[in-house]
Length: 370
Image (cartoon, rainbow, N blue to C red):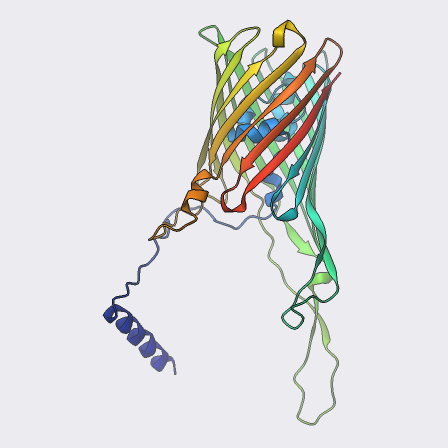
């Protein structure tokens, strides 16, 4: 039987070649990237709208509000007063992501601690099966959450470092996954040509594997019975699952103020990242800020970025109608308005991020300082 099957396959290939059809093999990359093998992808969805608009470059300048807890834990050491950031992400497919963080400097500003929470999911989605394509009448929900505790310290007037411990919970219907991870980051700032320059690197989501358990893995196995013998009830069993690694990522970023004055700042940024489960990527960004609008205590900013994330480096032999959509993926832009006084600060930010064939997404956040 095996020999006959192999012969049929060879014959099919010969017929395809004779009819003018061409069979082409895809080029598989020869590297150590473990494509698509990481779980907990919601850990990559970000925090505030400012960071979403600036993509992978924001970690270099994340020093002024609590969103630094997510992007670079070292950045919260640069905060001069306590702060709170709340954000909500209108994500694809009717899902929603929300993030909240609070940071508190202490020790005369030499150190800081912070807390953050991120949650992603959806509720009450109908269940369909092959036997009941119109729905079983039952529903399921997904709730993915992480909690983080951060400590950061200034080791000099130019250099700081920080570390975050995170507990991760992944509730997929009646199956639950749990993991623990750490983020580590550093931040350095100086002046070049009389204008600020900042450099940062982070290692994020380094931790245990995300393993699953729960009643959803319970099944009933029907034993073979003798013909015309007594019927036997299904025997209880549990499906075996493999734990997933977390999306560990190493990133570096650089920012330089091409224009720096009391009323006008133009920051140019660039970043590089190497995920565990993908090829290397890069990002470029720009933020044009107006710290004192008309000499008042109001401020504004416009910002944008382009982030390239390698897919699987497998090249398609022909272009498709989706090519143009994919070329726009990674584009993000946004802006913000704020008020900053000696005792109180508030900021409202918005970001739009384009995700190729999945369409556009919207991120809103509000920042407080006191």
